[in-house]
Image (cartoon, rainbow, N blue to C red; front, side):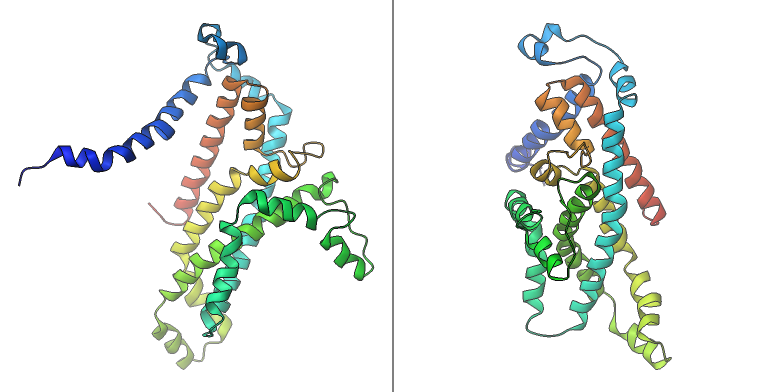
Length: 290
């Protein structure tokens, strides 16, 4: 049978064009720009851009604000990922155990924050965390606790952002864990019960090992997602106060689209890509995935 290349190109051409325009070309453009001093003057006339080699990277590694952004981002990752995994796993186990008509309602309720527009979520959370008339401080006041200025205090700003990103991510990962749980054969639990295994033993020796592929996928996607933290701090704090919520991507955005230091911003993007790639490969290797 003769291959009809015309129709193949007709069907895959639009997808390839989008991939080329919005992914491949920007990647190579970023790799080129990170080796130049491309700035606002070069945007007017490209001849103003000069090749500077690795100078952007040298300056970047000496930039205290960049390392502050790195520290904030990894702080978010180190706290948010285990909390999200624990809550999502707990929710999925409960949903998998309960066979009620409310099961669909709870799955929808958990998943809803993930698909809700981040701008709308930020507006609601800004109201919840408001130090003067916010719901959270009002609830704390009922118990005689004086709530802090959640988004205005450098000590509490990043924990507030972490609360938001965890709340937003739990539902999606709950659905993933639930799908993994439903693929575990029931006869394994029945055999364990005949051997006198407790609920904790069944969870530790059956559920967790057989959920390993799902756990690897979930944690890998969290590494990729949390290292690209941007929308939440941008909408709620603009990286403040005192750069306490400044993330790597937010710093990249400042350099590229506020100060128009596109060469410097591209070097940040390259370093971030290397961080994500390295941690992703490490996680897959530790999870036994090829």
